[in-house]
Figure 1: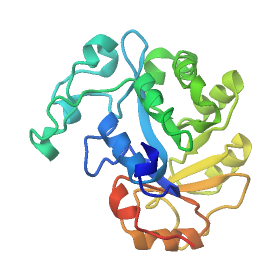
Figure 2 (figure 1 turned 90 degrees about the vertical axis):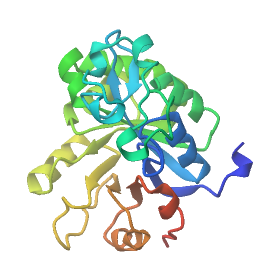
Figure 3 (figure 1 turned 90 degrees about the horizontal axis):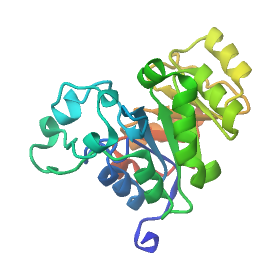
Length: 249
């Protein structure tokens, strides 16, 4: 399978998979990103009512499935039959594309032994089930990937707890920019820092430290060089096909 794909781009992070061209957080979107050479997948995790980790960004299925319900109000069996085809974006093109479980995403990644994933813990599920319940459920499923699976979150306490309970690398998604956040990052000691490109101070150099920077919402290949000169190494995008043509030096 992998021999038929483009060369791996070590700097390319696929935001919810190849989400510009396929419904986000689906196996279709993840597989396309891998085939286009993304070294990293990034996807979001919520828990179902029976505490099965599923790929879902929002606290409601309204946007992706047109259903006013929360993922945690449904069992995994129920969620597995719900099409998350994003008909507002794609019409009926992806009818039948359903929400995957984390276990299914792991199974896909096991077929690509040189690829890895940033797995975002959504705060809504933490608020619903508690931090330990969420990280334990995730860790059990991610175990076959070992160091290739890196939990990330806007909640630094949650990823810190993940590391305490299960070890491995972690990432923090910065809620904003500033010295107070920098001090928190130094205290946390995460291996990866994620930041929306619009949150970084204008002209600011990215902080040096024991972490790697991942800048997200990148859409133009020209941005790669600009952000690389400011200290970033990883670039997260939904526009995987367009960004795969960028050539960082």
